[in-house]
Amino acid sequence: LLGAADTFRAAAAEQLQTWGERVGVQTVRGPEGSDPASVAFDAVKQGTAARVDTVLIDTAGRLHTKAGLMDELGKIKRVVERHGPVDETLLVLDATTGQNGVVQARVFTDIVDVTGIVLTKLDGTAKGGIVIAVQRQLGIPVKLVGLGEGKDDLAPFEPREFVAGLLAG
Image (cartoon, rainbow, N blue to C red; front, top):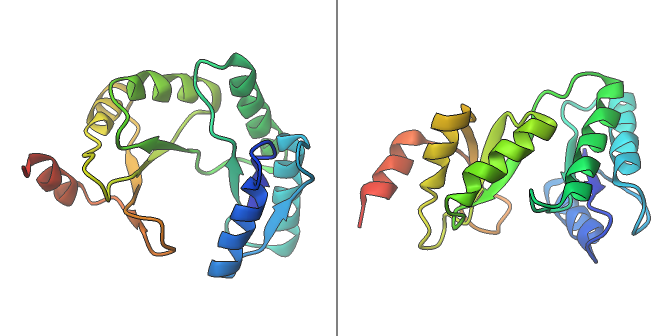
């Protein structure tokens, strides 16, 4: 089940619902501009009632320097935890992110205890080497990589392939 907790970006909920339909997954959403934590709560509540294996909450993209948005992220996690423990908190990092990625990951981890990285945009020329520093300094592993925009383009992270890509031209 997907929870569309990005309630501020125009068409974010519609985009997530379209992805849900493509992969055969229900999407819980609220009105545009509604409280993201409320949408997350409703999604987990519905997922629990339906006994689904996984509830994925999509939140708005945010800069780690925006205190209000980071506080909102912490609130979302606290609200979701009322239903039980959160098993996984993934931070999506763009492969083009430079050294700022370590600071970003550190701030996010301080707020929501990030358990893994999703490294996106590896289908272009970016290599995503920043994740090595994130893993070494913070101990956060890369779990998934984004290799495009199709429904099958999110793949498990393969360390050997990643290193080979870094070392290749």
